[in-house]
Length: 209
Image: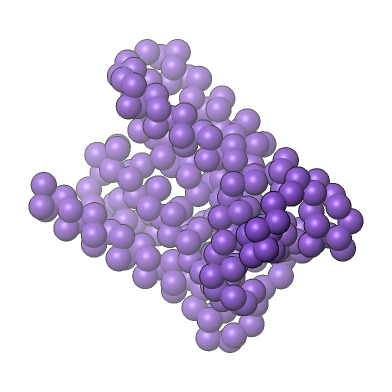
């Protein structure tokens, strides 16, 4: 048990180090990145931050999108947006927010792949290697250069490996089904279309039971 905890701690440290290294050029150059989706996503995050700051919670976007009163956050991943809004509030500047948010997305992508690989009984080195490859892949890297919200959804997809194995082996325990529901909920919260693309992947494992 102690050995497993030490191994998990080593994995977390390695994955966190890689997450920091991937954005090191941004940190050293002290220059933020604005990609294709950045304007849209940052408007939503700014709206959430301002609503938290002033305690003025509304379905309408009151502070962003040129104060046009659009309804965006309430229909597009409101919980994650408010989480990122809280991070912006704490960090205080957009540059610091970018650094923290990029590290978090990369880190969670790596951790989810690590534990997904552990479910397949790979050894420690392979699990960490797969995590490193995944967190630096195009799908996750999209959050860095374009603030793609899809990267948030994809970051949690490897956690579905456990439920897939449970389906295949007929392990329909309450714990496994609740875990599956939570992961699908997080993916759908990030991006509904990603959840719609992921759900069919579970069907073959369900039918093979």
